[in-house]
Image (cartoon, rainbow, N blue to C red):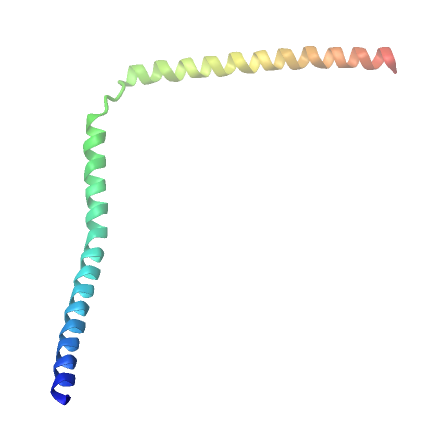
Length: 97
C-alpha cells in the first residue's frame, strides 16, 4: 500500500509540475501578446493611413472657406430671427402691460 501512495505522489508531483509549466508558458504567451498586438495595430494603422486619399491644400482651403461662409450665414439668420422675436415680444409686452 505504501508503494501505491509513493507512486501516486510521484504522478501527482509530475502533474503539478507539468500543469505549473503549462500555466507559466500560458502566462508568458499572454504577456508577449500584448506588445505584439499593439505593434501590429500601429503597423496596420500606418498601412490604412497610406491608403487614404488626402485632399490637396487648394481643396482644403476651398472647404474651409465654404464652412466659414456657411457659419456666418447661419449666424446672421439666427441674429435676424432673434431680433424679430425680441421685437414681437416687446410689442406684446407694451400692448398688454
